[in-house]
Length: 207
Image (cartoon, rainbow, N blue to C red; front, side, top):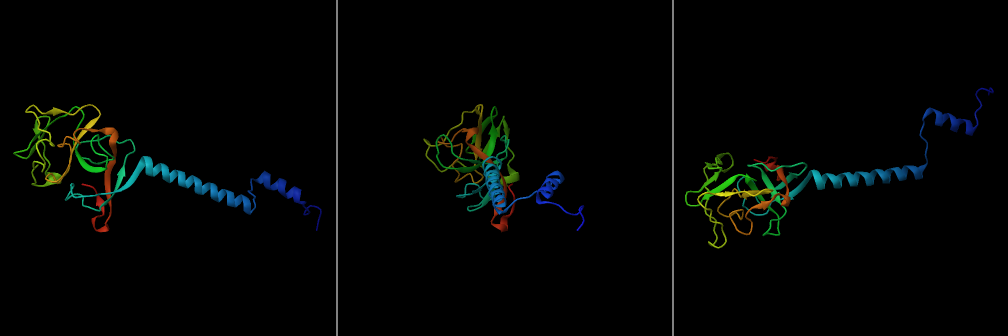
């Protein structure tokens, strides 16, 4: 072997450093694997906390658009509630359990419900809900007079930072018509229901 071809271990190490080669033993590889796993867990945790969640519908208050047992992808990243959105509420001031409802009016809007005719008015105009209710009318909830809110003729303005929500299955839904739900603080919104993930027969975008 010529003098030019002879290299000491130290020389090879220097050359490797200069060329940018990465060297390591099994212990270093194991450390990197654990580090990558921890980072992945943190990222997944952040995504499921701040970007989207998976929740399961309980009950029939949103039938037929949502059904009992549906699993939903709910997003919350920079979400601002809009009329027509279906939202998951982690709780309300009067209820300590999550509920799924549709946003009917947002802050500053005037809301009125004619229980006898089954009509909802927003800012003085009858709300067209045929896109998600079909021909179904808004029925008076099955509750005593003490439990539901009777709207004045001039309607009621939704307070700042609040929303007014109704279930699509109006005859059984406990929503903002009830005094223990009423106007919902936006801070109680978990997110907007975007997609039905399961059952696969109902896979698709939320109406």
